[in-house]
Image (cartoon, rainbow, N blue to C red):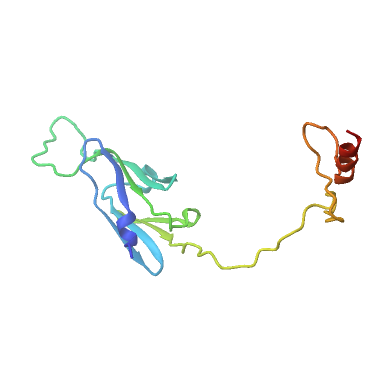
Length: 166
């Protein structure tokens, strides 16, 4: 049996002026959860969207060290700028029931797993034609089949009479 988590695939990570932010993807209590560490990001600078099975996190961290005369930065490891991270979500997730929460610099996106519907055996009713279709009469050995080259119905009685005339 395949592992649901193997169906995730990172599709895009475009970080301008920053390194990729870490994410964790896990399953718990029937839900897939993506947890992203986004220190220094404000909720109003964060956007989460879903399009064609791809969850995308975009946002921006702003430079908190003003560049004024007299300020010196001796060492800097915190990144700032725009970022984008996209993750393909497996088909087994209900895309219409996604929740997102941002608290203490951690974004948590959670979505319920949906079980694929297994086809169930069932009886299929067989109807006999439509109500406007004529009933088929097996008749007494007569055929009312229309031949395309004759343009009209030719019964076996008519064929017998035609054979006696000629």
